[in-house]
Image (cartoon, rainbow, N blue to C red; front, side):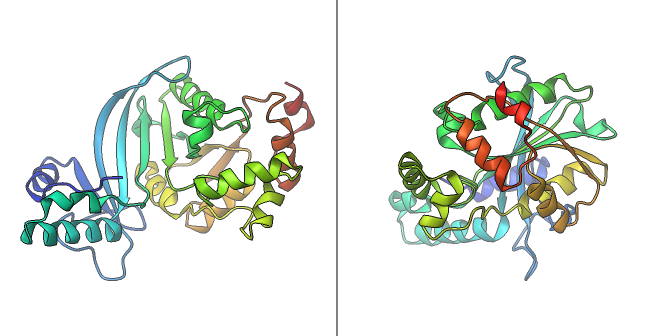
Length: 272
């Protein structure tokens, strides 16, 4: 993905408060210059109004794109070198595999006492292609609808670097082939020598600290580990809200494996 912004445009965005920087605790810090040494910071770009054509409600939301300052600095440094060497035609080298995560602010979430939140791991096959091997696409659309119906709205944090519970799209394709030979989703990961779940929720926690502003959060998830991971990064006041959707014959075995692994999914949920 292309991650470069012209320095003049960057300054204008900072002046207009459309580009800000937050520290690990979700507090605003200086957006100019290099990030503090040893400090993991996030850049937030937005809000950008987005009328959505997803789900039944299809709300207009405010979108924030976010990226880690350390990774962004590497791209900007390379861009400066290429300009100095007259190598703008090589700007394709600025394509990076780093994750650019997103926050969708639905409704008046900033004024809600206890916002509804969904932290959604990206899934190209489910979210984009509409694959029914998982329930990710229906979960995403159901979350958008629930946030739109919620008095005051809420936040959807879309984690771009979480494909296949963190193993990436290439390895995920391999696990699908192993699943077709009889393994379940977790066994397939292990056959490849990969963890059951290697997702990193640290950026999600930082974003929820910034947008949540110490308010209690209600998290749409069936995965208790997700709440444990967010709490480990300092988010203590989280209530889990069940979020089951899109169950059918194509993904029932997959959901049974998730239930057996520890997801809070009941037998009745799987007979829908």
